[in-house]
Image (tube, rainbow, N blue to C red; front, side, top):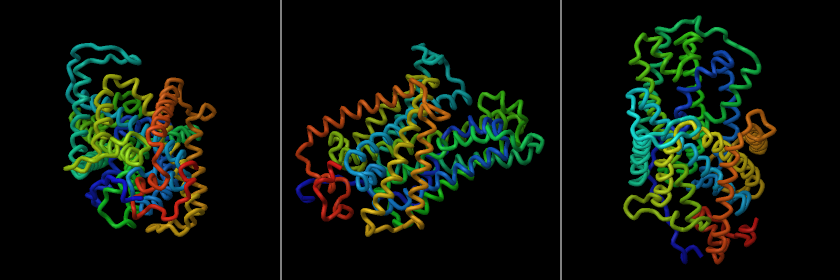
Length: 481
């Protein structure tokens, strides 16, 4: 069966350092420089720190399911292959499509964020007015700068995962250096009085907790690139969990730093709170611009990471004939999923045309796609523990059923946040984006079912898992599960 079909594979080129930089850099992004002051204002410094500690623990429950499944099934597509193995074809298709939406949505937002950061350091002339979206005037000059960033990252990914990983590592190191400068500068020049009150209200604590899940999105790109990792399988799980803890430490460090750096009036009135607060503490606008440069590195690492994530899911779906087969092809020289990279690259390069205000919709809507994937992975973890107890698991979570149930509960709670009955529901236009993506997915699903109707469940199994990880005695009902 496997010999009659050519299965495309990706090149193993990522080291331990590359994987850690991919996960950590993807999680950090731009949000911390804009939101750290708001976290302190809502909950106080101690309340904000507590909120992120709670959020990290909740994310670790979900992360543990990824930690067991990734080295057990180290294949491109991550959530797609986990849910196929645990839940069947249709749930897998839904999971793959929703996590692709999540990655593409966030990657699309990074372009406008990148231009915003550049504009703070070096104002961009407003040339050739195009239109106004959600109160933001879009100019061609602004669009060109944002698109240029997308082109560079698309090229880096096109010429291979190693080039993207090297870039990720250098940008992550630069981000970390900037964060440490902010921390030590705030300690040296800030004041304890700026940190009061330590707590505000329980409602403030809850408000920050509601924002925390979105700040940890990104560790889940590790499974997407698992097929390209050249490391022992049992190390993947440790790096994944460590990346979550490292991100939590980063956010807590930034909370402490901004609380020390400037009084409430400065933080609350700032256009970019971390940058303006550090400029205040150091008595020079140059230090604010230094923080913007560090944040730009965060934008680029997040942008790069989500491009990797989105393209690997598309590649896996194309390879398995769940999408047009062109997405499952790799470049003869660079061994990268070229069609997937071109598609995601075009979307991210076009995103600045939407301006920066409207693209917040994409971020919120894509967060919904992420938690859908978390929920499906947690379910797959539980189902696989029961269906395939003998599956080789280089890393096996202790008290697996309990962890799985807790992960399902955490993911279900995250989903509840975004539903109309939850405390932070998506607005109408965001639901329109979600439903539009689902409708597009239904079309692609039907087309794939018609075009590839002769592909058997055994062939799909081989295309998804290869000879090593495919089940040997596959029941033909899997595809219709």
